[in-house]
Length: 253
Image 1: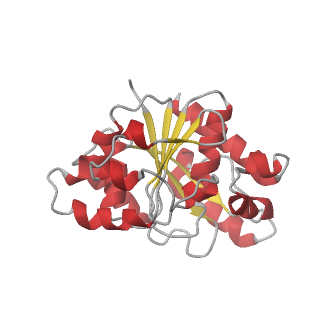
Image 2: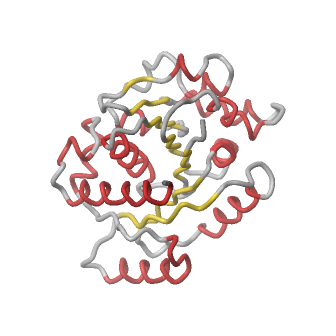
């Protein structure tokens, strides 16, 4: 089937990448769509953020990439209806080294996902532009970039865009930039608005209209293994991610 595969990417850590991946995926599932969340980060935060034990996972992304398990035998159900997870743990750190000498190493994830039958696949990428992220970009149909509204927000973004362009010119010509999502936005801080203006000027309509606010309830939710909708569905964070997911869905559909 034609799949909508979204790579959530930013090589900077702490920009809300995993929070975005989890809550966009969960909201799409709440819309009665089947969603697979692929945790491609050895830290396994998407896995634990949905209450799944990282170290006790029977089969993980590492096993699928290494050929030790099929996708179907490795995917776990989450407690959110229609949301499935290919979990990760620290073992995945070894995959980057093991893939180096493998033939067609950039296509390993793409091949692993080919049997998947989900409406959406969301890939939570590691905070780097290494081989795991290249695999995600090769497998994806589109890229979502979370950008924190801080002083160094755009630092490194040009490198990421160059990487996306390089992947488009080599392993995945169909790859598109779905959009930029501003995170940790504080309307009381003039810097947030300055960053928003700067990103708007540079990316135009690629910037999502929805901004994700700095929100305590968003920060709390992963420690409980819950999405923001379960933790506090009336919070500003929940309302923002619901709106962002609708924008994502509209752009893809």
